[in-house]
Amino acid sequence: MKKQKVNWAEAVKPVVNKYKNSKHPLEAKNLYQMLVMVVLSAQTTDALINQIKDEIFKAFPNMKALSGATPEALIPYITKVRNFRNKAKWLTQIAALMKKDSAIPLTMDELVALPGIGRKSANVIKFFAGAPFEGIVVDLHVVRVAQRLGIATGDDPGKIEQQIMDSVPPEEWEVGMSLSFLGRDICRPTPDCPVCPMNKVCAFYNGALK
Ligand code: SF4
Image (cartoon, rainbow, N blue to C red; front, side, top):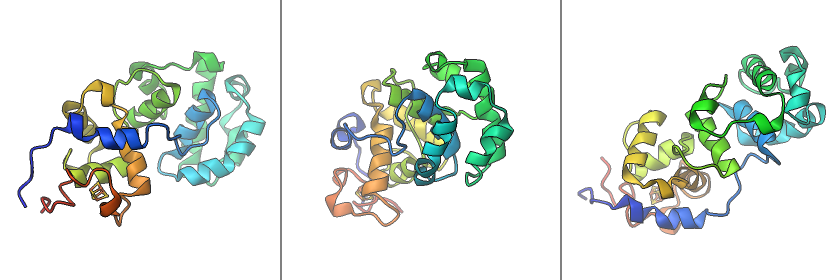
């Protein structure tokens, strides 16, 4: 089937509405916890980070507590996490800079200037805080879903983010998290297309992908 021209600004509304009140799978109780968990979760499952979080936050309950820690003090709590040595270094560097929870910045420029935080992590932190969108969360789920939908091509998260930003107006930029939820829930590696709210416009489902 030929690829249809899609008005993505309208087409994403069902998926945005479906997941509007969904909580991020990282079970953070506050912004400090979310920042720590997002940094730890790169290339690691959210489930593992949720498992180890209680011990981490018992030892380091806030930015002030972490700001006095060395990477060596944090490492014993995170050895199951991929790249844990660098992540311990980054988190203690961030804490030394911030010193208190209220100093955590909420602009893209300030967040991506911190060690261990790229655009994806910054978008997740901003989403959690309810800060104005400056971009779109593109994680591994979004990469898969966006390609199948046909809203973006390629597998570079930065380019996919830009393509979605070009197709969807800023007031719908929570669509990144919505597509991530869709990817965890329905558009899994084996997708359940008949129940998907995007199946009318999806290039994969409608046979428009080669
Ligand atoms: S219709 Fe199928 S392939 Fe397309 S987004 Fe939904 S679950 Fe994924």
